Image 1 (spheres, rainbow, N blue to C red):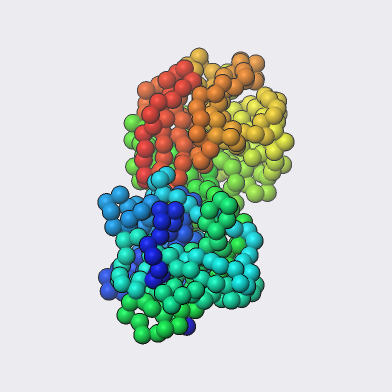
Image 2: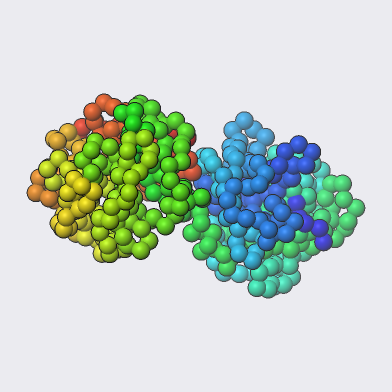
Length: 471
């Protein structure tokens, strides 16, 4: 049985638009595979698309340039979306890999639902692919084939085509095996091997196929698809040019990067300013040492709170231990919250309590002041003077995707939150600052694989159309 590579059956309906085409390498040696879009930024496919031995596929950037093309209907149309793959995440011990798109797919392309229960022998399944068919070398749209499940073991499905025209062909490795449910098609596996009977250019008549199960990987697929590859986001002037930069910990290599700001709300590339920050689950930035230079405050995995004094050129002096036992703090933001002209910390505890930790102007913080309770439903926070009254306020995103503004009441606490936006559920990270140098606090959000959205503030607690950047 040869590695699977397109279905010989009929053209799929629009509902199979989650079927993706992968092109690995370039020129005469380029290889084609199929996959399934499981989120706007992630495709699941076969690890054997990238190496003969799936166990040799390493996480991180693919060794060869890899592109993913998706479309609701026709991949050959001008509306098709193509993106390079920025990262691979293989499943341990399985011929399955997740591929992250560097530019997320548009909202009109559907994503596939994940099944969490297995097929059984005798069940029916549908395969969707974008490889070769019985009449086309490179089809412009997904085609389907009907299969019967012959057997199921711990990791694989054995399948046989229901008719002589139902097969899996060259170009379909990683294509989705699906089960129909009340909610539509559900992903139960991905094709990995096939006899290719009935495929164009093949003399073989057998049309049996093999697939890797995905029902038992549904939690892993979901967790991978929804993790933030940029682990943390903060803002400060780390290049010394008077413009705010974005500071990010890259989840792929664990390094710390500054994305220089252009003073108009956008960013210009990135530069590495630190290594091995993958043990830092929470960061924020501000002038904690009182020298008018941006510093970093970080919570390490062991719960230590550290201040990294910046020198204004992207370098940092000796760290200052600002506290211990911070393991339970899940969110940090920074600003002058107490009105003493020193940068303070705003921290959300796992139990939903919100604290203000007054800065001492020397890189340390004082005892925490309870600034609110019931913040366990808040998943992201940022600080800035969003209403223009000279006091640092908080902006927060609720788990339901509502954006709230919490104005500073001048008494080490905040007034009741006011909803200033909806539809922020897919936002991964936020931070505050004046990114367009107009003297008003803005909001910077990371919403997909690489795109920054800078929302200019109006000094009234609201935000206007964002400036977008793909560094």
